[in-house]
Length: 178
Image 1 (tube, one colour):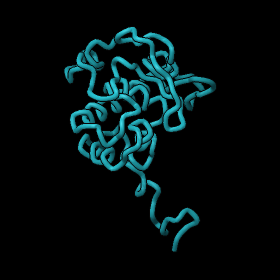
Image 2 (cartoon, one colour):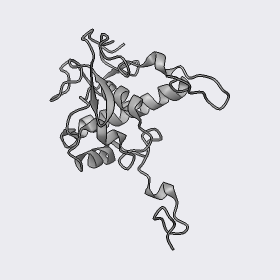
Image 3 (cartoon, helix red, strand yellow):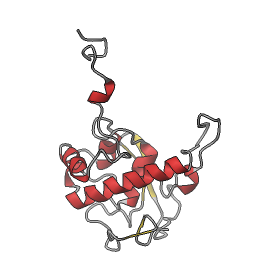
Image 4 (cartoon, rainbow, N blue to C red):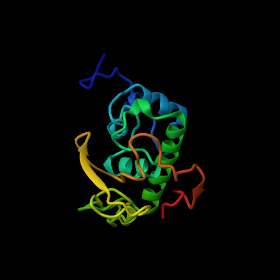
């Protein structure tokens, strides 16, 4: 028998959910395969909970910046190496947000009633028009996947990764990113 949500009795929501980006269940090769199936912008693909669970607007912007991937790039153009960088960036972004207690933008509070502090670490999210923390270029902002999206036009080139980007990391950040 099916429930009103179209699930068979005994079937759980978890069975139909995508792997999450924090626990490591989503491997770089799995992320690459999932992105390769859609031609929409990589930002929109990240927000799709059937592709990767748990990624919202803040974490998508921050992880794409960390991975030096332009949010408007078609997801099908993300290489295996870039997908690996993005998977690592998602895990780093989630870990930093969890350590900071999340992002309090308006009224968010944790179970104890405490405000989060991750918003103090945002490198791109909600910073459109401000200088990039890595290169001082003015951050761009536009609506993408029906969400305000912020990126650095220099660090997140629409084609290839920024020439200064390497996979060697300094303090958990892309080289040159403070």
